[in-house]
Length: 151
Image (cartoon, rainbow, N blue to C red):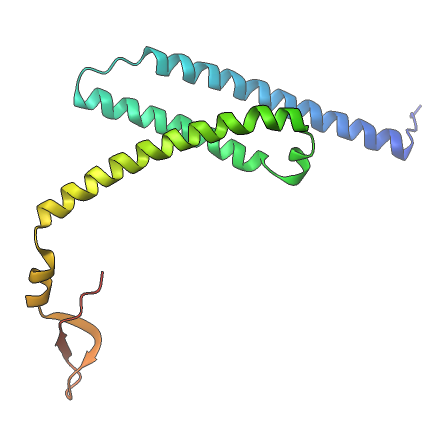
């Protein structure tokens, strides 16, 4: 004997199953976050390789979290967050992001200055070079030298 379920009841059941799957996925993700936090807390680098490995774990953890947020931040999911929740989330995320971007800027600027110092006066070097233009051809179809630098 088959049980006949109405369209509305069926749709409601499918919605509940989808929500259950999301909740199960979230629980697994929460366990991964907790494990990552514990792993990061235990890090105590003492040498260059240890610090490099630690930064790799940190960036990997951030990347995974941000990818999850990027997938999750859509109109349908955002509709489920009320104003009070947004007011709680937004300032924390903004503060963390600004701090992270300051670190990013500081390190990127320091490495850029280091590279520029290493290069010295690159403009003089480039000005003296004869680089093939790629589009510049002489009458015989051979590359013509050019003083144009193309990065």
